[in-house]
Image (cartoon, one colour):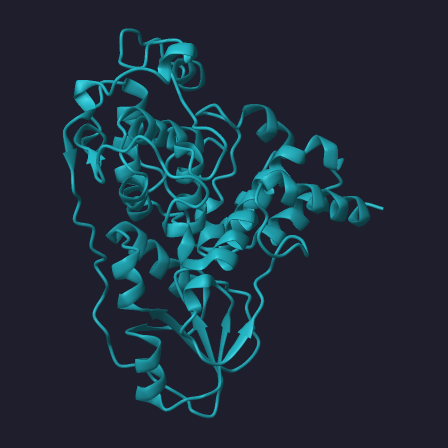
Amino acid sequence: MELFNQEVSIFPTSYSEILQRIRYIDPIRYGTTRNYINGAVSYLSPYISRGVVSTKFIFTEIINRGYPPEKIEKFIQELAWRDYWQQIWNSKGEAINQDIKHQQYPVSNHSIPTVINKGNTGIHAIDTAIKKFYKTGYIHNHLRMYIASIICNIGQSHWKIPAKWMYYHLLDADWASNALSWQWVAGTNAHKKYFVNQDNINKYCFTNQKNTFLDVSYEEISRIETPEILLETSLLKLKTPLPKQQAIDFNKQAPTLLYNFYNIDPNWKRNIDANRILLLEPSIFSKYPIAQKTIDFMIALSKENIPNIQLFVGEFHELQNNYNHQKIIFKEHPLNYNYNGIQESRDWMFSIKGYHSSFYAFWKKCKKEIKVLMK
C-alpha cells in the first residue's frame, strides 16, 4: 500500500479500514525493505499505540496466514519491541524519565536545536521529513533515529526535551517506545550511541546530498565538534489542547468501562451494557503533552468505533466522586496508577513479563514460545 506518496498522509479511523490495512501487510517484504523510506512498513503504529489493535492480534493474524516464522522473524521482532518497551515502563515506572542505564555524555543543553524544530538543518531528507511530520503526525522509524542522533550525539542536547517534542506531534505517541528509543540512540539505554552520517541518509532516503555537516565517515562522525548550525537551541512550550468537559449521561446500574489515550479498543466487552467513558486526565496530558492533531485522531477513533462512548475531561477521582460510582473496569497501563476498580490485563503477545536488561534477552524467551506455538 503506497500510503505516503501524497503530501499529507491519511490514517483512516474506521475499524474496518484498520483491519483492511492489517490484511495488506507483507511481512516478508517488510523484513528486507523496512529501513528504506519507501519500504513495506505496515503503518499500524498509531492503532497499536492507541490500543485499537494489540500486538498480539496482529501477530496472530500474520501467523494464521501460514508464513514460516523464520521468514517473518523481523516483523514479529518489531512487534515484540513494542511489548518490550511497555514491560520496561511497567517495571521501572518513573525511572524511564531519567537516564536509565548510563548518564548521557556530553550534554551541553536541555533543549532542542532550533533548526530541527523549524525543519531547516540543510539536510534535505531530514528537513522534508520534519515538515511532513508536522502535517501528518507520522515519521518513518529510521528517520526518527536519524533525528535523535543529530540532536543528542551531534548537537549534544539531552534526550528528554526532544523526545517530548517528537511525542507531542506523533499520532502513534507511546511514551515508553519513544523515550526508551531516544535513550537507546543517546547511549543511556544501550552500550554505545547510535550515529548516522550523510551516506547512510542518502542510501535509505534516496538522496545524493554532499557537503553537509554529516558528510564524514563513520570513523570521524563520533569525534566532530557540534556544528554551528546546531548551537542555537529552543525551549518549547508544549501544551495539550484538551476539549471542554460536557455533561455525560450515567447509568449507575451498569458497570463503567474506562477508555483512555492508550486504550481505544472497539472490541473490549462490546456486548455488555456499560457506561463507556473516554477519560482524559489533565494531569497526564500536562506531563505528557500531545498536539491537536493527536487529540482529534484519538477522539475520532473512539467515536467512530465505540457506540455511545462519552468524553470526560477531568481526573479519575473527579469522575468517581461526581458520579458516586464504584464498579469501574479498566485495562492495565503504567499511567493508570491512580485508577481504582477492576484492572484487566492488556493483550500481550507472549507470557514473558518483567524487566529484561536487553531486548535480546527478552526475545530469546519469546522465540521459545513461538516454537511451541508452531508445533
